[in-house]
Length: 573
Image (cartoon, rainbow, N blue to C red; front, side, top):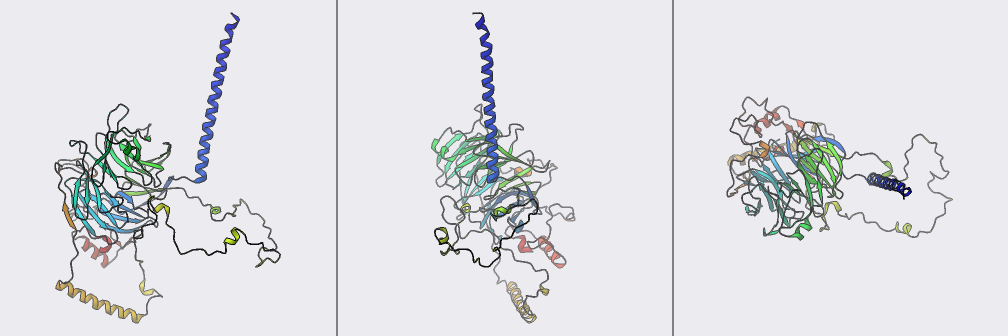
């Protein structure tokens, strides 16, 4: 018996050795798995941006931005009330619309790209015609507007989220509005959003309650409450839907981004208890999030920090953090938008739009499969028949299979729809969609144009233009020319909504002694135009060329007149 007492220590050592070997095997498997993921990512390419790719300077201070459905145009709302539309392919300004007097706080494109709805800090919601730059309609609300959104399939409906009020759905055709039901009448800090196809409206309040309403009838379909680990509720800050799939995210005040499946929400019904697919957060710094959105394919989620200019990118399926993009230190982030088709992110900080994209590496083998990159010069041995027009020694094989198919007629006229531009329930692209804005070319020296018309034709055309201009002056003096149609303004009356609320972009309410500079265009700044940061720069057309001489004085005289919401700065110039 005393001799057997020495065996247990050896058994303990053997168990420890077995546990050590198991841990080593698990560690090796984890390392191999991570290497495999890195290999796959490098082989097929990343679908998220990795570095800064320049900036877009809108002349004015940018506050919010949004892409159109195809990512060809980027609309930027500025601090002086202008809307700058960028051609994202050429990275140039395509149009400038003098939309509001006060800062633009929210923008949204219509489905076909012909219309644009905007909201400003003076409680005005306007609809714009993108091609002409004219204002179609205008709505005045009693409280500031936090968000505007077009119906994804019906551009006649617009969802508006006023501050300290229930969400409102506008019908543009008859200028009517419907106030959406809320869970608690005492809690009116409500955010709302259409789902991917506009069948339902999701609303969330400061107590963490999510309501799913039928868009047509506003009937309650499903509801649930977002709770923390201690069963306490947390306020809902924003709700964002993916362009593909049924997933959506909820940004809450507890600094956690929760990703849900919309089909599961509808299945659970009223007072359900769905579990989030993912919970995304910064465990180290406990970062609060300013703006969150999905990637174009719905596989990634980007969140902008509310403390600094930093973008966090997660992979939705796994929930792991794949990239952190850092901007200039000390800047605060205002807005984030992901390109609908490409791995590109646009972020706004300090009034400038920053573009984030992938690091493009030239790979010529992608264009020519037989192309080889050489580290040093190699002596090439030419074949005897390589440069012969016809190889006499080559025997012609019989055409079978793929060779015979080359003689078939190839259709080069029909165009297949691009899958990225079509929804899952659509087969064809929208033929009336507005993808680009036309820009007239500018000729610097038209008199020296060798390909222009002869001098006689020029003189004849000038005489005709002079006669037509004289007729226009006479008709305008007689008053026969129809005046420009003013947009219709509709006042939206909301019960129990305070009228003294101030938009968050303008700061907290004060007693008039606040030292914070008022945003927007200054009124009556006589003698102070030189030092005013809001004074617009004068540009020639849309190309950004400075004006000179009499043209500059003419534009200054026009800019000194009261601005109308329907006039575009491109038309003034």
